Image (tube, rainbow, N blue to C red):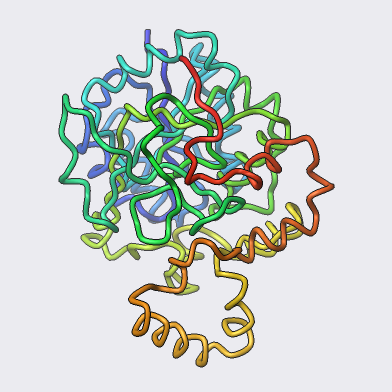
Length: 349
């Protein structure tokens, strides 16, 4: 009996589904595709391709990633499956024995204590997917979004990131996992997460992760399970490589509304803005001057503005104003943590 479900959410991007399916051998996983509001033509194509690939197909009961996740949990529970992996269409496992490695972890009762579980992600932005080597110790790449901590808002190998990966040898705590692939327990999700209809795609997973942190439940990354996030796949099908940077028409067509920053600020009391706070006024009020200033800084120092990791981000500065509201939660613990010192916490699993 299959013990792990796999959730993929589609919206007007069914040209990608068969490519995604063929990028890995998923025979040990029960797969569910949920359509999140495609056009009639795309919906019919999705049903056809899902049937062809022997993938379960559902039309969303209610739009939005969080609602889709809830719907998938109900579906998988009928199959006695508690653990579910969410994946993007341009994401695929690099770890060949993925099911076996996951079984090792989910058979340990300690893993039930955690919220969202992420992995080590090799991406195309830094062109490092080809650097992955099976059966060797692979260095950590992009694993987490970290808007509350010092740095550029990420744990990744890139200028501006403050994380020091030297002591990340065991599963470790993060604010929010790299969202292109995430593992979660269905029962835990239903117990702890309040579905927010205001999120469709953008920031939906960050909101889930922060809900867990507010309840003092750690989100973690398993460092020895590896995924690829190959955004260049989308170019073959005329789909924007970057969802966040797509034009308004394409964003709405493929991913949904783009008001997530205002939704986030209203709910979490800080701006999800990773700009350095000392330069923010130029960006906000004088965008042309900000662009010129950024180029001047780079010319003089050789650094991008975001590389000045000792400077507070707008996210941290605005969060600080409401620290008391989050007292005695992991949100404040992460705010006070410097990733240059290593992980906030490690776990024996």
